[in-house]
Length: 60
Image (cartoon, rainbow, N blue to C red; front, side, top):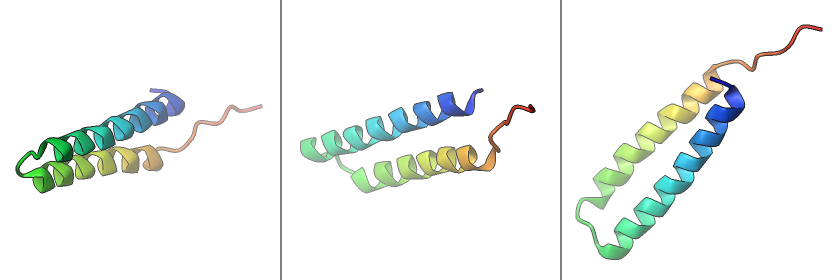
């Protein structure tokens, strides 16, 4: 997968996650802390994977 595409996907998922947590907080969902923690770990792992893989450079 192209690193730029992966970054765009991760950015979109991060924004959607933030919006989801905000909506769940507004409606008073129980166990919001657990939901937020699990989502944060998943997103954090995704961003860590993004940082691990080197950028492919073209040989000139």
